[in-house]
Image (cartoon, rainbow, N blue to C red; front, side, top):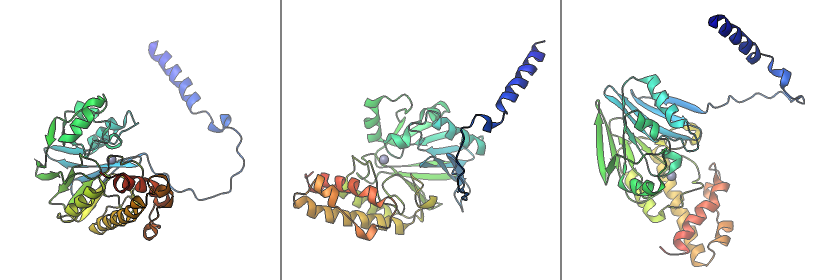
Length: 307
Ligand SMILES: [Zn+2]
């Protein structure tokens, strides 16, 4: 009896759900036929070309690297800010690839847009690792979705798991005061978040940006042994960065700093500098116009104020 009732109910539900969609749709004016670009899925996982076990997980406009080994997974950045199920979706994507446990979750730095959602990894048994200052930053905020790190890095640490090594290096103050550079020495791949956008203008945020120290950090990173860079945002169509891209960002920051130094000393910070600041050599970079006032503001914090 119950079974029959359930079957009838299912039939009704199915009929309702499968009803003609157009029947309730408002009338639409005829639109000119245009070839629709294929929509980018909200979530995407892809293996990095030329590697056996390095993956990029993207959620919206943020992305993270994870490495699969026979003894477990090393994941980075949950990238689930404002996405309550994002951490679990990332865990689920990993589970589609391997049954090995998620052993580590590394926070690239303390900014929530990259590390909110770590709870799903903690619940899955991962040990969370971050720079020591990330813990100091996160502790007062007490976000239930973003657990504090279990283990802290001061200047460097190498995680070795299932035949893969991942080096974590603190190269100093830069985009934040807690940024870890992650390097896979065998694959010659680095994962660096926000400090080195690939072929785009730096943008919003970075209120805790350290302009002069960032240049030093980038020089140290360029001196490391790597060929490809996975950024924290899928810039430049999602391609990986190169040392040439890192050199371009360094040159851009140096040019911005020199220009803003003049404005700061001419007394133009903040409002006038934000309006007048231009970097014509970089005008073709995506995000150029939107990024200009943000970049100007950061350097006013240095040249217009003193540190
Ligand atoms: Zn950040």
